[in-house]
Image (cartoon, rainbow, N blue to C red; front, side, top):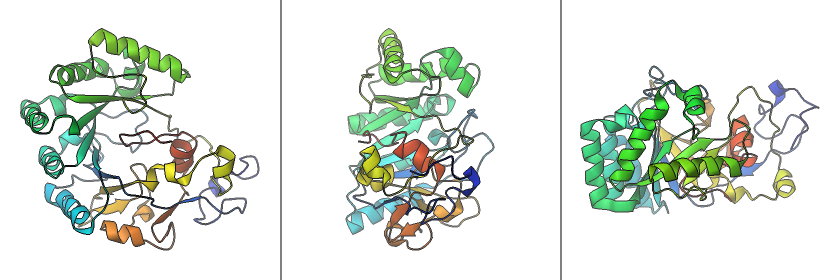
Length: 329
């Protein structure tokens, strides 16, 4: 890791091959593609204070991806033998996309596990969406999991992040999912100075009070994400960091995941290294998984991702977080 006292933040993460103090930048090859994420669009019914990709009711930087566009990637997975086990859906709020239920059906019918990241509010609670989810749960059982964003186990801190009244509305959605027998997980944040032990204890008390079938002690059932303050100075990651931190590149999210999304104005979706590297167009790896695996030059080396974005350090390497169903590490 580079010494933050020797270089200014503006110098960091600019050179794809070298850190600001001249060390070789860390890289992560694709070990095995296990999760394909589909960004359903950045439109959301709410605007969170610190949304990772600035989703909101007006941000359509990523437009709604269509069922046919998503199915083309499922076809490629099957035709080319990619070892994908899980299809993840993220946004924005996925249930705002009119093709969401159809995309879920396609993924589940092909025997993938499906994970949906949702705020469990009004878009999910519309009658036709609930009816569609019930039919999918009946047909596919626990291969469908909904991970609900509940930033804190108290209304005050959750609403501080997501807006007044959102806590109660989210609890209503989780209550419905639990009562109907869905596989549920929660996603919280660690931005209030609590220890992980204290946070899990607080969530466990809420879970017990609401009779939700969620084991708070399990990192894949209650995912606690690090805060993503874009103004915070973070160190760059060098090749030497793997030994210093006792980490393997294979444990990083981009070693086993890719995301597809469709930028406003583009005619086709683009493959991205992960769910977070959305703000810089040069992180696009191509229009197919095959093109992404061969991406070369600039930020990539034959599909290997060079860790030249602050999120790489803040969220994955130092934060130890992952968006997929299984924990990193």
